[in-house]
Amino acid sequence: MNPQFLVDRHGDTERWTLNDAATRNALSDAMVLGLYEAILRAQKDGDLRFIVLTGSPGAFSAGGSLGSFASAIGQALAPGEDDPLVQLNRMFGDALHALCELPQLLVCAVDGPAMGGGFGLVCCADHVIATRRSTFGAPEVTLGLPPAQIAPFVWQRLGEVTARQCLLQGRIYRAEEAQALGLVDEWVDDDALVATASERLQALRRAAPGAVASTKQLLKRLRGRTPDLRDEAAIAFASALRSPEAAAGLAAFSSKQPAPWTHAPPRSAAAQVAASQERRSGLGRAVAGSGGSDTK
Image (cartoon, rainbow, N blue to C red):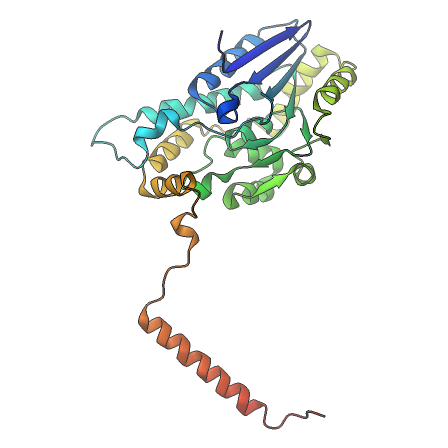
């Protein structure tokens, strides 16, 4: 049994819980492995109709866990050395691709933050329910990292324009804002998530399981396969994690200080003199131009 990923079966429904409240359900290697194994098993389970993916109380997922990466942050590889971070990051990409291949109806029940990798998981769902206090975002770029593995799924769920907004700006969205984006299907009061999820599952029983599986396959063909960037994404993430930029960004995040790139660079003395001269010149033009104005 994997304590960081719980599976609870009731008839034709399974509840999958990301379970590490101390880290707000950060996606550790063990958690991702548990998720991936559950997906592979579910793909072969003809008696399983519904999956509810959720987090232990207080959070859906705060995003990727950097615990196993800590010693590599800001550290360059030796020449010719294979990077173990590449395979670790790719495993999460494998899980995302497999999640989208599920023949069952997948409902995400979100309470609290769904960040980074958690945001990516939500983008794979067929139906998303969120509490009022839930928040969504891909803040990786604010830490000096690319949102590499989740990018294709955010793009496919939300479209290019909105995906650019989410992935390149690192914005955080409230539940009602996420609904306007098309990420959340319904949001409810904080204490109504479990009841609403149960009601939604009852309504979803109108859909025949074989027809659901067939329709999901057709929809996949209609939109095309999710771009397979797993190797490129893993390499990009690993390279960024070893960079000085990520080291500075993550250190700033840990100390709750602004990252260094959030500050405008100091201007040189020459630039300050030029700006001062430009201001004086502009003031002189404004004074000269006001001479003939009518102030009545």
